[in-house]
Length: 249
Image (tube, rainbow, N blue to C red; front, side, top):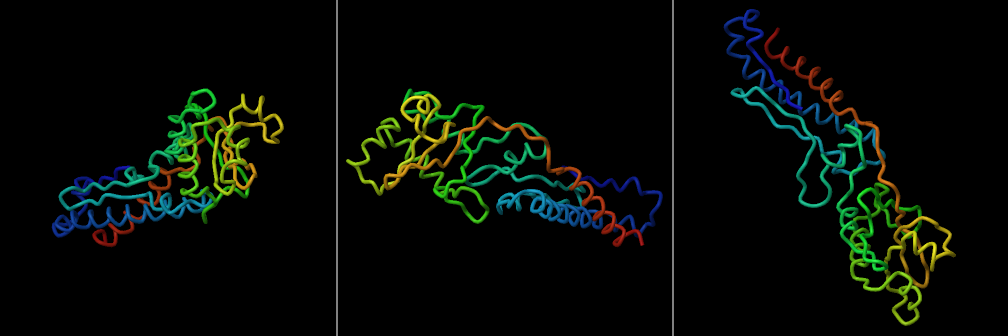
């Protein structure tokens, strides 16, 4: 969102002294406005989202104006050194649309299913953490990044099908944690006795099988975070207040 101030619209309403003050006052007011806008977006994200992580809370950035360029920007962060880009995963919340597939979800799309060689996760599917105690959650209620990494590493390293992992457990280290994918075909065949009837990723440890991720259709969201309305209201109010206090007195 770009915010521009055009002082020429005030030319007939100001004194000569005010003409000199306007570029500096305009830059100060714009910068104060986009800063307050970013803080208001942060407050709104905390109140509207369920336990947003710090990356989401601090995703609302701004670019300052100068006296020579009376234009400021308020935007959602795009570049991150690692992890998922806020501008991408927040887009469905701002504009509506299909759920953003995270790096983990996309990685599963490139990982072959040991059972038949097809990708574990189709482009129109996602993996959702279950309510199992086997899911390690961070303070924000999400599956921990470390567990996502372990799951992906385990699945990629397993060269045999999921049923062999369980059947050969006696001959292997039972305390070792392994993750494997169970497709719908496997549920209908060798895993008919499993209570869960939806495909997903299971954890095998100490002779116990626990489902940690359930495969689901890619959700389609209605817009729920009015980024532009929040930003416009906050920026307009703060700019008018600051500019008036500096010049129009």
